[in-house]
Length: 333
Image (cartoon, rainbow, N blue to C red; front, side, top):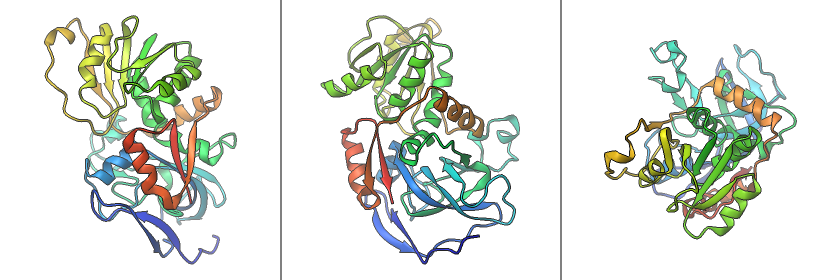
């Protein structure tokens, strides 16, 4: 093992609704199945915003961040498959029990006793982190740290939502942020027609969507020019569910891709009838991650991002909260 640096920096949340504060901590030592990662970049995800704002409740104090890319700096005694100096990605799913009925039926994303990076264990808004080596992904050299970081959640969990949409030829993406701008590239590469829905008046966002291969882009309040085969909702706005149901054709599916969403308003049964369905997506599996990262290289997917220093994490969260981000935001220690 390399000798550990003297200390690490982290942006820590002490209580929901409070700004993150910069703290210095001792460098942690990995347990038997863990690796210590020197972080090169960490994406800023809407789930981080839900953690900070108290929409979802986990361990406190906590260091948010779960789109982590870095280099293995130290390995635990029982780690196999990863070595010092190797570049890895650390995702949202940090550990599962392996023994509950979900884990035993290839549904580890629904584990009864999970650990989540940046939510129930410290994450990547820091210079270093610990991670269970069995849940890390080795990253191809063709993806540099800052381009790769958004793939670790916006890409991975977005891909799970995309899979839930089935073989839809015409697919709508509501909320054209980090996840949608990644999936639009994949869908266009696969020959699908992508319809991008943005906030009212977001002409720049609609233009951005078209540059990524979207066939149509418009405000979420506007119906698409033809019925969709599936819709994925990334925006945490429950009122979009009835709108998406109106936009999809018979036998189609609306996928809710976020970990948190405002209440869904009442809607008439008529827009659900004719075998339309609504489905949520929870977390990811390691198989999802491996499959998506292979595709990301084949396409190849290029993330559009703005890099910011680690100490500006609060500013990054503010921009995400206000919806003024094109593509993704990435913190660099």
